[in-house]
Image (cartoon, rainbow, N blue to C red; front, side):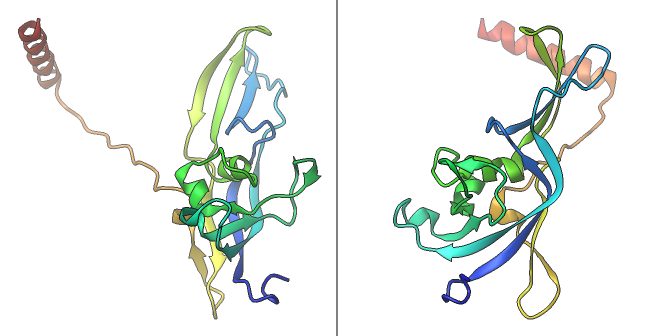
Length: 189
């Protein structure tokens, strides 16, 4: 319909799409001390989810948020009392501006939530034992104009993940670095 009105629109597919039911920007899993799932959270991760983007000028939010806007024709949650989602600025999603209207926190979580596992010892005591910050929002894609090729638009939604760099040093190098640190501390005192 939006294309018929002359509004640029495209379909977006998000793989490993988070469904953050309580809007805390994480997908929480609770287990007991034996490792059994406690089913305390309604959060989930879907293999993929599809929505639309349309190109809008955002006078209500300011020109910084002009451009592609997320519109979900199949929302799973109520927003302001009705089933709707968007228009959420992809710029707001990328910048982490989750305080904006139009379901920005929900879309942010769909592409960028952390998956957190908790051990629940009692109703009042829990401990985070694992957090995966890279699982959600993979290969966010649209179809190329004029071909059936996939175009990766992940960079429109989030900054590149930081890669961990591992390196090895000998124990003597490590030990010597501690000695140097102690010298600096003694000098500082």
